[in-house]
Image (cartoon, rainbow, N blue to C red; front, side, top):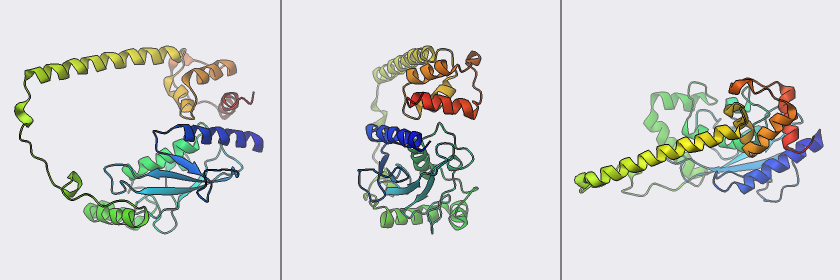
Length: 265
């Protein structure tokens, strides 16, 4: 079982390294890119734009338990952060994905992306840090100010440029009303083309699912596998298509599909 877990983690780490668009990286706890211990990592991501955490760099301590992937990894913020769902003292995290909502189809990358998204969408009514949550609910401007100060102090975030939109300055609208009917026609044409292109892409995606629920397939695609690989694994294991309807897979089937995807059966 430990060998299977290590092979899966190696694949997950490879997928993170290959994905240069997500902004998610993973290293050894020391920060070295050379990973030899597959029970302890450090995750890294940037603070999302249009939040008090923008341009900050956040590090996450990650420990893998013996029950992974059937139990979530243990994660906490190493970088101090002012956020209602993260302890300002210990870095402990309150997030469904790392608790009851965890599923074996999730990965280290999807967990780190969920944490990054949490910075954009805090949940003050389900807090880890009651003081921070109270400030966000009752004094949101003060919360944003303190969160930005912490981002600058602990995460290396830059200060907003004077005159930028984030400082409240507005730009001149001198020729905003100068666009003619030709511009409107061009915009309408592009919108129509985009709509047709999206419809064609959706048709191709449905065909690629071979009758399976797209939501069920996409859970495994989120692990870094191609749709074709996931569908082939479904067919090999004998997963019921259920006329394309989504349903909850039993843990035994999830384990078999995961093993097939990682070349273990």
